[in-house]
Image (cartoon, rainbow, N blue to C red; front, side, top):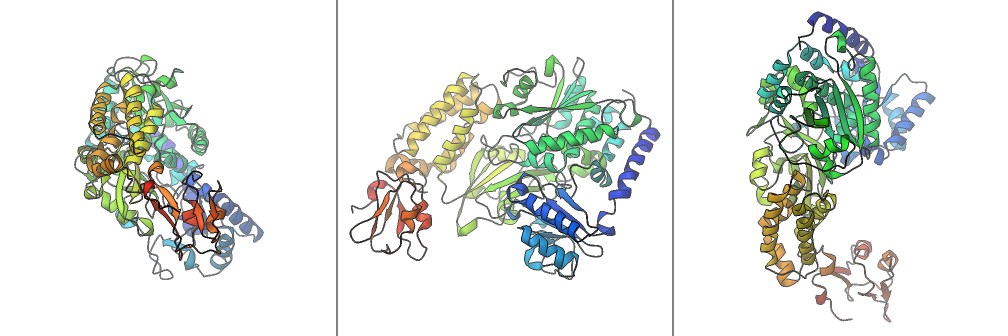
Amino acid sequence: MKKAEPAAVAAAFNEIKKKAGARWGNLWQDRPVILVGAATCGRAAGAIEVLDTFKAEIKNRNLDVPVIEVGCMGHCYAEPLVIIGKPGQPPVCYNHVNPVIAERLVKEYLLGDNPSPEFVLAALEPSEALPSFQDFPRAQYERKIILKNCGHIDPTRIEHYIAGGGYAALVKALQMSPEEIIEEVKKSGLRGRGGAGFPTGNKWQLCRNARGRPRYMVCNADEGDPGAFMDRAILESDPHSVIEGMIIAARAIGSRYGYIYVRAEYPLAVERLDIALRQARRKKLLGNRILGSDFSFDISLFQGSGAFVCGEETALIASLEGRAGMPHHRPPYPAIQGLHGKPTLVNNVKTLASVRHIINNGADWFAGIGANGSSGTAVFALAGKVVNTGLVEVPMGTTLRQIIFDVGSGIPKGKKFKAVQIGGPSGGCLPESALDLPVDFDSLRGAGAMMGSGGMVVLDEDDCMVEIARYFLEFTQKESCGKCTFCRLGTKQMLEVLTEFTRGEGKIEDLDNLYKLAGEIQAGSLCGLGRTAPNPVLTTLRYFRDEYRAHIELGRCPALMCMHLIAYYILPHKCERSCDACVGSCSVEAISPNKKRIKVIDQEKCVKCGKCLEACPFQYNAVVKLTPPSEVPAR
């Protein structure tokens, strides 16, 4: 493939950029602007009602103020989020906005000079009016590259993306040879963000050198990890960054056909991808002779049915071909023989979203970010028992302690940190002693965990590590395609053993059986799902063996989590006879007063939901949870 004519490509794009910049380039300077975060997380918190309120107020007051629906800003703990910018003032981000607050902001800040600091999360720039709200609380620890646009542009307007520098990397790539593009990605040190961490440039080179035509470009957006939402948020908030990365990758390998494999359970992501693809075609950024060059490439959307195993690239390809989503033995690798038997490059959403920054800023710039052989940044969905949940982007090499306690602000309700489950359901559970471990591909693997696609679930003292291991193994066991005997039956046997532990029915020799089963499953499984499924069990055995022994030898659940090993009862000397809070909270009517009006729990009826403990007034604290149930005193 020849290089495109530089002048023609640049001229074609400059005309597009000129029109986009004329309308959107000075968005903050010309007039007030309201941005409402309305990705899935914002919508769940009521962002659409807030958006509608702002629009109605602006219309009723006949104000010239654009109200723009943007994507996820990352601070999911503070949704709904709104950013308001006024000429001459720094943009201000408001949190937990509701329709009443929205009306006040229009009246007091847009029409007046009161920025309403009681609702402010952060001032995006230094501000004399808001000296206590300088920047986001965790901004000093983050390095936003992939998430740079998320929450700051309208994902349904390609002009916003272009005005902010979008598609400039494509113009540059069209003036480079495919070999030059691949070499730049190699030098950057970019490794696949889907979990395996394979060098991206090497993968591109393999596909380009493979025999066979046509070659296919596939974006793997089949994100299915419990607690993970990174890819979804990027697709909802900045879809053109992924599309631009796909076009550059296709140019590098010599592909004319591409697919985005996205799960149908992400309707907003599907909708915004569809809009973005149509807009890119209208601007001649997709299709025949892109920007007047000799390179042609187009992308189709394919909606998956939610099978977790289809995140594995050979199973994904089988699904694209209309077959059951089952992995096959490798080699041959998809880069050599993939979709319809032709060379196929499969890259993750975050991998492709990184590409434009490498081309724009250079390989040395990207390689200078990160540590320990892992370049660039890592994007995590921080979830679980942590104060500030949401999307986090930090340089590779940042420690777990910094992510959880500095970025995430630690554990809520004064609870003690216990573990972090990293790498999705097939990742590992790491204890407090591992908090200073740097987050990179090799360090995590050495600790028994893995980077995975970027899920990070924080656990506190109330979480039972035996039950956590059982929960994640149950997920992977259900999601197994069943092709491999070791995965299909081995994970089932491991799950049965763990279930016995949580019931107090396990045997000490079963611990050795778990190790044996795990080794056989890892050795005999075809794909990554089976090979990594035992990880939660192995890491909890490695770091929390005492909890296993308590379940087996003492019949106790130290975290008071396993239902068969706990019981609720009411302390007679603390029960307030006139209070019926626990009675009203019990859906199975297991609580009733005795002759002295002291409440008693019928253990045969009790389903151990814990609602009575939550309902009991704090000052009385009459309801107690204990383990084992045999410790419950006679009435």
